[in-house]
Length: 475
Length: 105
Image (cartoon, rainbow over all chains, first blue to last red; front, side, top):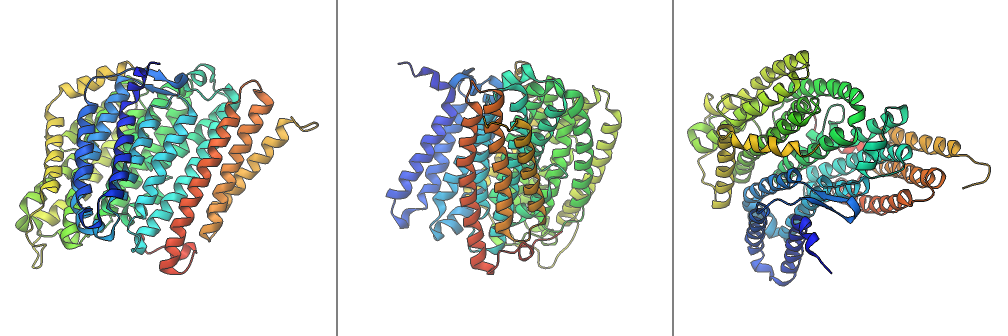
C-alpha cells in the first residue's frame, strides 16, 4: 500500500501527533516539573510551524472530502504563525497562574484540537467534513473560555459561547439540509454545478450564512462577542478574535466564491447591508467602552465589517485582498492583545483609565500598543493602511462607491476611539500609573514578532503579489 | 417511505420544530431550557436529512450518514454545555439567565 498521498494531510497529522505527545507528557511528567510542558509545547509547535513552510502540496483525499490547494496550505501556515505568537504571549500566564492549579496542559490540548478542527474546516471538500471541522474548532474554545473555573465571569463567558455556537451550527445545519434537498449531494463541487437561484436554495444559503456569521460575529449576530471576550482569559480572547475569526472568514469566502457563485446577485445585497450594519454598530459601540477587552471586542466586530468589503468583490482580487487583510489583522490584534495580556498579568488591570501615563513608565509597551492601534485604524506607514486600502479598491472596482464612502466615514470614527487609548497612554498624567516592569523572554519574543510582522507586511510588497498569484488558482 | 404521508407533511413538521426551537432559544429564561431548544433545532435538521434522503435520493446514503454525525456531535455539545452550567451553578447557585449578567454594555 502507498501511504504517500497522506502527505497531503501533513499539517493535520503532525498537529495530532503533537497533541498526543503532550497528553503522554502530562501523564508521565511529575507534578513539580509540570512547568516544563509549556516549553515542550512551544518547542514542538515551533517545529510544526517551520515544517509547514516546506513545499506546497495539492490534491484531494477521501473521494474529495478533503482537499489541499496552495492557497489553503498558505493559510494554514498563517494560522500556525498566529498560534505560535499567541502561545509565546500566553506562556508566562500559564506558568504563573495555571500550572499551579494543575491545568497547564489542558490549555495546549484544547487549543491544538481547535486548531486541528480549523485545518479540517478550511480544507473541507463537502459539507460533512466542514460541519465536523466547525464543531471541532468551536467546542474546545468554549471549554477554554470557561477555563478559569474558579472565576464566575469565565463560566458565564463559556456558557454564552457554547449556547450561541450551538444555535449557530443548528441553524446552519438546517440550511445545509435545504441545499442537500435541491442538489442531492453534499459535495461542494456537485452543489456548485447543480445550484440555481430558486427560493429553497436562497433560504438554505441565508440560513447557512447565518451560522457562519455567528462565528465571524457580524451584526446582527454579534451579541455574544463582547461578553465572551470580556469574560474569557485573554489568551482565549485573542485566539477567538484572531485565529477563529480568520479561519471562518476563509471558508465563508471559499463557499461564497465557488459553491454559491450562481447566487451572487442575491448574496451581494445581503453582504452590502450586513457590512454597513457591522461597521457602524461595531464602531459606535466601541467608542463607549472602558474595558480594554470589550473595546477590542467591538473593534474586531468593526474589522469584520471591513472584511466584507473585500468579499463583496466576488472575484480573486477580493479573495487576495481579504487574505492579506486577515494576515495584517492577525498581527495587529495579537500585538494589542499581547500588551493587554502583559499588563493584566503584572497588575491585574484591564481598564482604559489604568493605561494613563503608561508611556512615562513603560515606553516600549506603549509603543507596541500604539503601533498595533495605528495598524488597526489604518494609518499609512504600517500594514493596516494597505490592508484597508486594498479592501476599498476591491469594493470600488465593482462600483460600490457609496459603500466605500461610508466605510471611509467609519475609518474616521474608528480613528477616534483608537486615539482615545493612545491619548490615555501618551498625553495623560497619572500619579499612580502602572509602575515599570520587565517582561519575560517569551512575552518579549511574542511582541517583537508581531511588531516585525506589522512593519514588514506594510513595507514588503512581494508578499501581496504572492497571495494574489495563489488566489488565481482557487477558481 | 411511509404509506399515505408525502414529504410535504414531514418537512412542514420539521420546519415547525425548527421555529419552535428558535422561539424557545430567544424566550426561555432557564439555561437548561435554552439547551433543550437548541436540541430541537438540531433534531429538526436530523429528521430533515433522513427524510430528504429517503424520499428524494434513495440510491445514496449521504443524508443518513450526515444525520448520524449530527447526533454524535450534538451529544458532545450538550455534555460540554451541561458541564459548564454545573460549574456556573456551583458559583452562583442558579441556572437562570438573568443571574448571568455581571458583564454589561
